[in-house]
Image (tube, rainbow over all chains, first blue to last red; front, side, top):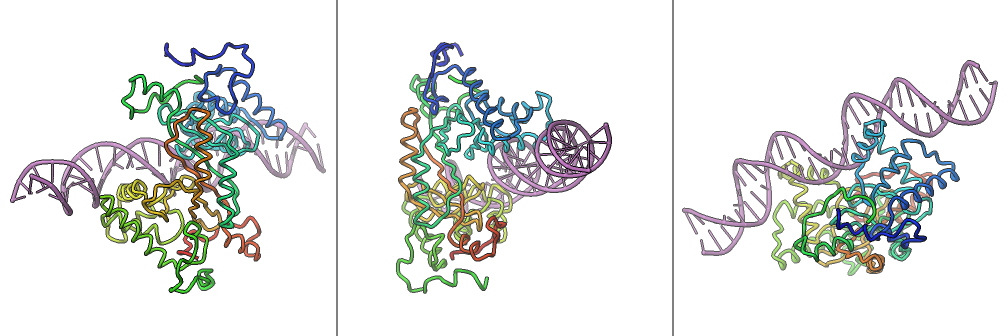
Length: 197
Length: 197
DNA sequence: GTATGAATGTGATAATATCACAAGCAGGAA
DNA sequence: TTCCTGCTTGTGATATTATCACATTCATAC
């Protein structure tokens, strides 16, 4: 990890470090990012009368550890490590709550969940999933959402929700491939890549 | 089935009955629709050197029976009824082939598969899934696809594929609700709704 | 006809998700 | 306080979806 791009990250005092929506693929102080989102989520739940109980909060913290999608069973294992129940419903319930509350997104493509970078703001982001490292970035794009809405109109379909996901390669993985670490098709990189880069 | 809206369907001789993309939610002669798509898929496979073997063809026919998403195990059961193997890989392999060949789509939202209405034409349709009856319509929308592409650009993300899905209510289910058959939130209607309407 | 690779059949198992019910806990009403 | 109520959590069981490994069959080219 000595050559980790996160060495490029900004100093702690840096103000707005990166455009929020692209943060997953951008060098940033992940500790700070993590804390900021958690605080926002807490505020959102408090103001909305949503109970961010210990399991739920811990679940969110687990999701916030990295900008990637985590499976429910991976979350469950971590919850058990923290002393919570170890049966699937424990994780699924907490994850469902977070999604419902607008604090997490479900990543259908990989049957996983990822923390929302804009807790509480009703939005339907484009989720960009890197096939190299598993990171997930959230891109605002009212554009895509609007286009789906428009696609529904001529069919007289009453749209209630959308899932918009893209798969491909993030800039860091592309750079790695270019450096000859991969062969251009390269095997997926470490699935447990750490926090921000 | 006596009050099936498909009674409204066009007469057999009707020429181009409905805009292709909206066909799932539109009154049409489904037998003809089914046959047309199957023929197109056969032609596409033939011209591309893709082997549409008996299981694969049967699988496509099963998907074509209705404009909805079918689970792999449901397909598997039908395949077994037709004398094919009854172990999961039988269905998954055939379904994977069809998706790969551009003759079917995977519907991530419901872990299902649905026949493609434009076999062989490389496209990333918006899949509109009715929560009332389970029907799935394919809407062209280069617009949404383009918007996702644009969302990826500022993140320097190299987009390789997309899943764009919308859930909501189809016109027929909306009409049913309006007629007082439902309560406005109504339980999902029969999951095994027949072919076209 | 025989070698070859693709496709299929089959048993086993992995990964994901839900159900049902008991127990605990927070808040308000009596 | 005590009880009631509804939400939340724990737990065992089970359902659903998906993949692996390996033997066999089949189509095709040689």
